[in-house]
Length: 136
Image 1 (tube, rainbow, N blue to C red):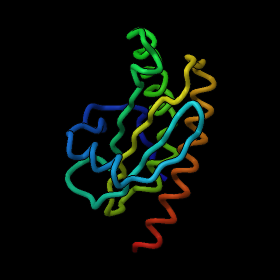
Image 2 (cartoon, rainbow, N blue to C red; image 1 turned 45 degrees about the vertical axis):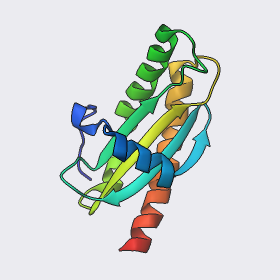
Image 3 (cartoon, one colour; image 1 turned 120 degrees about the vertical axis):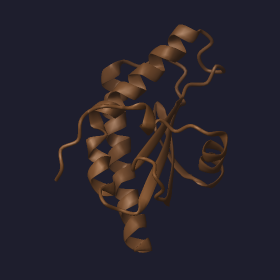
Image 4 (tube, one colour; image 1 turned 30 degrees about the horizontal axis):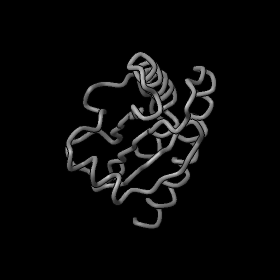
């Protein structure tokens, strides 16, 4: 088991309209309230093994401060717990694209977001392991 730094560098952010559209059109998803998780396993290119998108809709949070706060909570809880997922994708020929979308109407506390993030990443790790095993 390799130790991963608890960082979230720019390279791990999912960018690009085509990549994001493909993720939402062809990806699988589930809900770990207050988060909706959409993920897609794609053949590895020169990108990091995991790329993440964080989305908090204006429809649910009218004020930018609330949207930004929720996004910070999601990013921080992902950064602290991404090791749950990294070991699964170590030395595998795939890149995992993930979108974390807010589905709550109230701003949750960090402890709630972190607990649900751990739950979501564990579930994601199981699903990705099954998919990788089936494809290899």
